[in-house]
Length: 145
Image 1 (cartoon, rainbow, N blue to C red):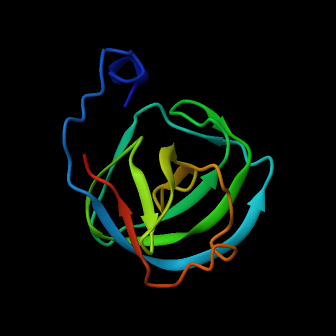
Image 2: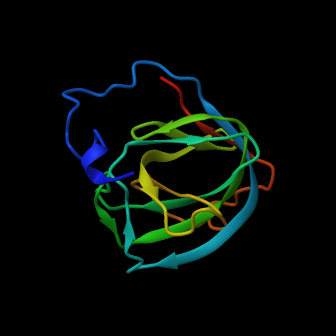
């Protein structure tokens, strides 16, 4: 879609348009153990992405002040999850893995599409999935509104 048609890039909303939503629910299918201090992820401007049942996407943590449209350097690789209950993943939503909040959704990087979406999560305590001792099959939830 051309930028001139994107309402987020054109700043046409004067407030957050997401009034309410159901949670996105999944399960962890890969635990990752990697950290890159200068990754250069470019977050897209739209603050949400539709994620569909059975898709697999990557969870990446950062301690930077990441927002849609920004570039993220410091990343900690957490894992991949399979979507079990699809919906809208929305920036600002709390993200939990195995019942533990790991951070707040900061944005999306499309480097690896159509294979998977990089979902970037802002946290004050960055760590890899291995460092957090995450378990395969753990529930992954993006809070609804």
